[in-house]
Length: 115
Length: 290
Image 1 (cartoon, helix red, strand yellow):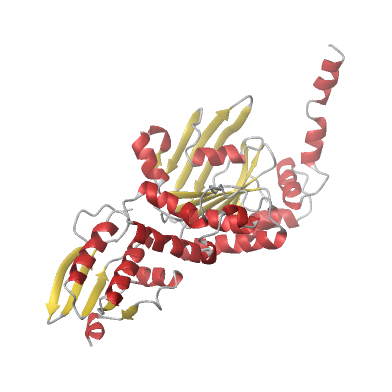
Image 2 (cartoon, chains in turn cyan, orange):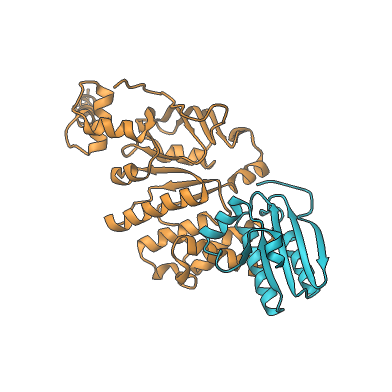
């Protein structure tokens, strides 16, 4: 388990009512709570679309994945389209083995996620 | 084939430390149960520790999970010497491995879901929603999502093992220890649990250590195998080497033939002769009051 003191969300970029969230570092038990709370706060602003850019996330454990599921559930209730973009092979693999790859909308890169 | 008692196989990638390192481990209860045991387990491999009743394999497992302290020798997990760690450091190491006990060790007063959630409630600050999602993810991984609201008493033996396994992986462990995973299961269910263990090892990339005396299961799942006998490590080697010993004719070498007899489950051989002869003269003379 890594203990990365840096915030999980490095920046939020806004394009009209679309929010692009840049995530950095491993998301595991030591950071999942903060990761989830920050995402939920961004969701409170009711963007029409929220793109979570995971390009800089080499590893995520099941607490990170569960956090994303909770955010997805809230996003659906708020009519926000949630898109995961630029997944590393390990994160993609984790979503596949937990059979959640079909639950999330996943884009190969940020451009596709915004299209 | 050359046998090297007490040998430590070293097929690890150069420069990579083993995840588990046991050196010269000695433990004595009423007799010496572990007598200078050495063992390395490498990241991502499945190591099967085998041996007959009383050979010391369960005692070795209890040392590996830090529930026993050795009389002498060392045990390192993740490069940390367990004997030197304080309580908090030991807790941190314990969070990095999961254990499937023989019975599944589920709490009968809790549902399957509550059992799986227990380590998450004890060791994390995650909220209830997130824990519920994680419980379902873990149960899905072991094919038991449908059983989230069932009580342990409603489960078959195989289902109990699966539920116990879901709990063992609750905290995303890096090592999974299995204590006699086939115990009490019929052959088909046992094979299914073996398959699940292999699937999880591959999918999750965990290092797996299995203590068993079930040879069918051992040969199905092992990358490497370690054979204990009377507290001593007879041989640590890739599965293929043990398969070769099992399938070859007796060599006349005591150690080799002892391993062969154990692997084949033969009724005659060095193990049987040793048991027959062991202590008989002393017993009979004791009875005669000498």
